[in-house]
Image (cartoon, rainbow, N blue to C red):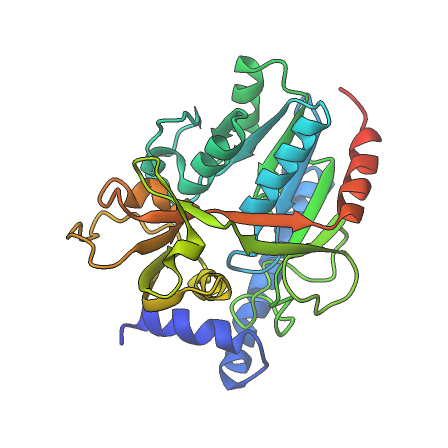
Length: 330
């Protein structure tokens, strides 16, 4: 087994306990922790300047490696702010894209140019979305073209200290903080606990505090031709499923909770580009995530994308509204 594949399988298991592999990696974690603390200190002291944008910035992120539900929460927050009368925009690094410039995401953008998650956010919400490795540049570009925007949401920017922020929202799934150690001996990108404005759990709350969200699939799927299929119409027959996520098993488990019988599951690397994907005729219905759909449909338009619905408890929205209304206008 190639070393990369072995690490991808073994490290997540090691991160949930303080076993032998995790302990071997602790010297590297100490080095990583020192570098993170030094970099964060340079931004806090002003030695490395951060950029404050003309409108309030709300950052959504997490402190562990791998997906925890940041993008679904970003979508939910945007939809909530729209309903409250705000004019939000979204900025993102656009992880996995092949370009390096700052650009707007369009409805017909290629995921390879803007990233699969920013494209999904734009398609689901319709709000302006810009990508750039420098989030401040993406924010300035967005505001220059959409001056009515009065609040920005930064998707996956908790450790991007070059961008000043007004609110921080941290997302955690059922893994919590794992073994509590920093990368690579543990899953943490930075030390926990840390002060954040809101903490949301998308799985079992293993550390206490914060708010709870329910994560489930919609009752329908849609193919690349725009046709919808009810999931319960697939019950009783074998189906295939694939997912290019940090934790594909989570998607497969949600499908099983819908009563589907998975004949073959294909876990793929996060942000998989599907360039090498076979477009041979399907022998069974093929289910995928919305994140994968725009790329997969280029090769297999009959694949069925199943939307994910994230529903935070009402108290979370009440707390968010209080914080947002208290933000100073600039």
